[in-house]
Image (cartoon, rainbow, N blue to C red; front, side, top):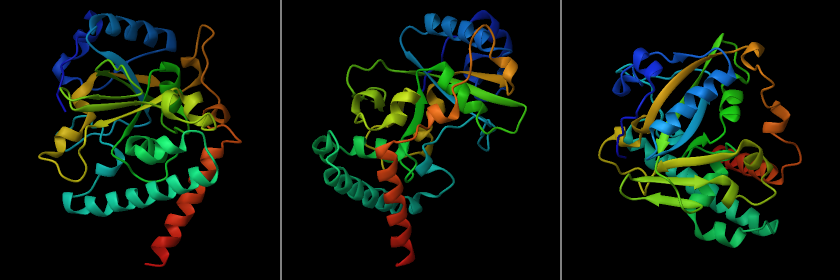
Length: 272
């Protein structure tokens, strides 16, 4: 994955050099409107990229004390363990294909042919670990996730610069990035994807064979890091967080299918 150095506004430059954003603490933000204003300036400064956001309760850092953003399948393991994880992912994908066909889910034929759609469903519904990482184009969604079930006094919102996409599954070979727009690939029964305005990002065609693990770290695309307060006063001027039951809606058929797959995978582990 190609590394970029984003362009910062004058206020953010006083806080951190563009190349040191991952290393430094997040720029302190007091309310949602202020965050919108800062990201508007970043969008204007970084016209070569489209901005995506990610909200987290904690600022996870590597041994070099820099923020790090690995897809779940690559976290905390050595390379030789990866093949087993990808075998589990392949098993889950086959179960997903089978259940989409059985339930006559819209788009099941396309899901059968495209691994990125299979991985997207499994990642978004937290069935198994995948080589994809969740992002959103909605600041409100990112802030909601950063604060949700968070017992700390603060939370973090990250801004990433990604290549412009032209397709539902957009592969940029020059930057070695795949960007999957969930609103365009998920069936209408997948309510969660539509309420979360999500997308998934990963490296193109890299599984358990890679040259350096750092090429899988999305921090290569990090432009800015913000620290927001974890309390209701953050939401001012008519803005509000998204209720949890909206982010995770009931009567989601795809969630029910994915819960079945989770159970079947657990049973397979027991009988090994």
